[in-house]
Image (cartoon, rainbow, N blue to C red; front, side, top):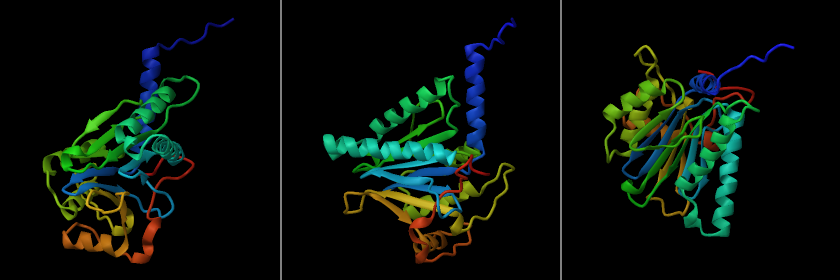
Length: 261
């Protein structure tokens, strides 16, 4: 009888982490920035069928990179959690912190289980407050850890390079146009330090706007409104679009695998 091949727990976890990181790195990046009136989400995403940025609840939004089918399951679970908690208790009891904890438990359990592969996803959960200092942004890597972010954060693709670029240029009190311009500039940079041209059709943009009178603060920026913002702020993109492009500006991932670069 042959002796089973032994792999130490440390090596097994390192291999699982590397597997997940490679899958996430193949995805196109998402950038989240705080600005004066809320939080803006900008994703490189030419697909009109699949969203990388979505509303979860009144003041909470969700962004993700990686395998679409995996993070879409997480998004749906988050919506169900928020609806049930808001209905059972109070709408104010649904918070980004609570949702991030739920996602952390789910991702951590999957990552440490030897019975299934780790999820190839990285998530951002954000909540807009009544004032900029009340905004919350949480990044959740594949292993279920929680990172409390401030100002700006990037996930997927060359996230380290993009994050460094954002840290040097982001400031408090930016207008939406200034934040959008900075986000597009950061996404346009490639691994070699050069710049690409991103068109409005390649971007998915949404905000959590604290100034909206509605209880729901999530809003997608589409068509001519997105083009106008890009043009007014001199973002290095070809901004073409129409208002008819409405609600279907979405994800670049293939439902059967990781996003392509």
